[in-house]
Structures are given as structure tokens and as C-alpha cells.
Length: 234
Image (cartoon, rainbow, N blue to C red; front, side):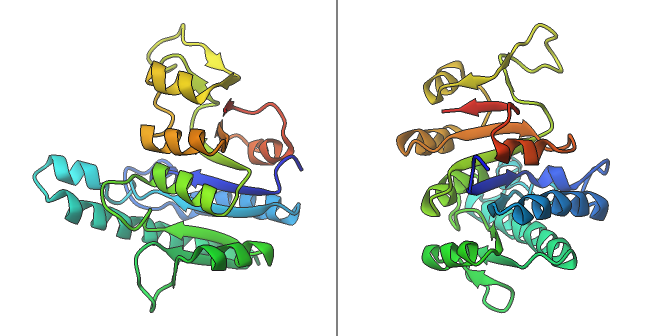
């Protein structure tokens, strides 16, 4: 394996499937199968998951809600997704721990960096919910933060496109895909990979980001092997 320990970033929308809202159990099961496959190959796996399939804090704020309240609602949405993914993994025999950036001891463990690292060392998949535990920060930033804290070797951002393009390939047929691009170029070109705070955090700590299409069968396995999948930022 090229990567021994990874941080996999999933959007909440990835769990919707063809639905317009919520969680599609078949999609969650498919994701769990892929995570199980790389765990059985010896890769230590941590995940950060968004909540956009249920509620997105910044959208609530644009419609008149208090931003802090809206972001807390978004964090709770990520916990619903985290628990759904935990359940799917454990039904497949994968020992999993969900850790929350917000304290909810009757539901899950509160995030503690050293405890998260021990879980990974023992072969458990760790799911980080509730973002950073703070409003005004996205789950992209949470992925960059947790990835650095647990000494992940790469942040893998799963998307529905096969990498980073010079423009939206769905709108611009002439858009070209990058095999590799620097953090600085991503910021300068304003490419919508992750938010600027997440990019800057990874850049400062030399943590590469791999953007790839997880919907294509075998892509996650190929990515952890170091094969040419998606776009590498770093």
C-alpha cells in the first residue's frame, strides 16, 4: 500500500443516491463495502462526513437563521450520517468507532486525538462527526484538521467527478483535468476543491489531498495503492 493511514472525506450528498434528501441504505452499504475492502488490506481508515443531505448550516443562515444555530444543526446532521455509516460497517463485521466534536456521551465518544489514534492502531475504522465542533467551519476544514491531528498520510476527498478540472466539466466541455496541482495553484485559480481554510491547513502541514471519483468501482482501492486515480494536490 502507498498509504498506511488515510482520512477519507465524504459529503453528506454522497449518501443520498438518486434521492433528493436523506440517506439511501444501498449507497451507505456500497460505501461500507469499499471501506471494508481497504481496511482488510491493512489500511488504517478515518472518515469525516458532511451533513448536506439533511441540513447545511450556511444555507440556513442565508435564509435568516442565526449562523451559529444553523451550524450546530448542520453538525447534528453529520452525526446522523456518521451513525448510519457506523451501523453499515458493523453489520459487515468492521469494528467502528464514531467520535463527535460535540459532547453527546449517551450517543458516542467525544473526540480525543490520542484515543482516536489508539482506535486506528487497533484496526478500528474511526468516523469523525460534528465537524470541528465549532460553528463557521466546514466539514472540509474538519477533514484537514483531523487528518493533520491523526498524522494521516493523505486526505482523500470522494466526489462524483474523476478529479479537479480547470472549469466545471458539466458546463464547459473544453475543461481540462489536472493529474497533479499545487496548493498555491488551487488557491490562485479559485478551484472549488475544498474551502480555502482547508487547503491552507493542508498546505502549511504538507498533507496532500487526493480528489477522486468514489462512485467508480475499484477507485478507492486503486487510490490507496498509489495508482493514477483522480487529482493529487500537493
